[in-house]
Length: 177
Ligand SMILES: NC(=O)c1ccc[n+]([C@@H]2O[C@H](COP(=O)([O-])OP(=O)(O)OC[C@H]3O[C@@H](n4cnc5c(N)ncnc54)[C@H](OP(=O)(O)O)[C@@H]3O)[C@@H](O)[C@H]2O)c1
Image (tube, rainbow, N blue to C red; front, top):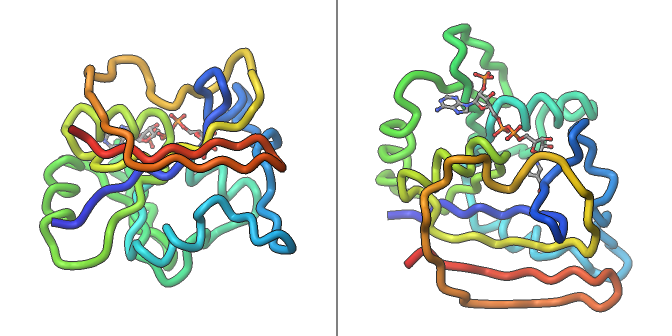
């Protein structure tokens, strides 16, 4: 079975976006210094992404219609309207059964992009195999939490840790126990 990997960045106080959804506090990748926080490795290891409707809406609001070209991109929504376009496929109904089937198919790993709502949904169905979390050295004081309320207690084992002194970012890799 392929893995579902939550690759994401949070503030020191556990937020993945400000209340207004802005992401200006995230460090920008530095091509000159070859500093991409593992993005290219992750991107090469997956062939599928899954994200919540609010995350895709934010991406689109930034003018990016097709954030992950050449990947199969799914956007989860409770809406019955089919909003699919050439870049993403919207999924509603029994999204858990859908994800379990996807996971059982042959292929590369699956990137759970977020956000907090979807992270908790997946956590509660044991659908997060690995978390790669970059902690950004800022306290935001509020925002969208990494996991929305209602997450089930779930233990993880640390398998890797990296840090970048230039930006103060620490990135941990955890496998679900
Ligand atoms: N820092 C980072 O690395 C990072 C990464 C990813 C996202 N983000 C940020 O996270 C924020 C969004 O997170 P969020 O928690 O507000 O929302 P989200 O998880 O992205 O999306 C929530 C939406 O997903 C759909 N959904 C949730 N549960 C569902 C279910 N059981 N079945 C079907 N659809 C379901 C619903 O869409 P409908 O309302 O259409 O029904 C819900 O409104 C954004 O600001 C984004 O920029 C940050």
